[in-house]
Length: 211
Ligand code: GRF
Image (cartoon, rainbow, N blue to C red):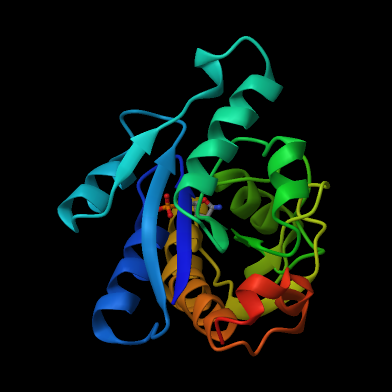
């Protein structure tokens, strides 16, 4: 059983899609062990509690250095023997020690078709604003592995979404969530849990032996 930690910062609709996927069987061999937010008032924490999933706030603001924050976060993940970290709208740059401790074991959902509209400054509504300003006719979402860059890790899954005349950033964000993000993230976790993802195989022997 793949032990999953979901890191969140906001409303948690992607977290909810994962919770629902586990409950309806879309996601078979994975279990959400923990939800961590950097914001104590993130509604995503409420969603976790409503599903009896342990949830906590670990904020970089509460620590003198990013390294200290990283150590606390790492300890929390290791105590739960987490196999896969899912960034679901997590707006904090992960400390290096987390990325180094979990090579090819961290995935992120980005609301565009990487390599378009990604990198520094492209998050949340900013992405959809830029899509509309550029006038592209197709956008979408991407699940990718997290490395030490911003949205630069290996791409795992993508799904295209049409842009319509009259779309606002809010309308487009909702369509990308409904037609892409909430489908891709559970699918990515399921594929990893089934052992169908090569990148994931670079992990240590101990996890591979689970399958
Ligand atoms: C989503 O649009 C996701 O693509 C981006 O942040 C947003 C998170 O939304 N990374 P939610 O908190 O999952 O509702």
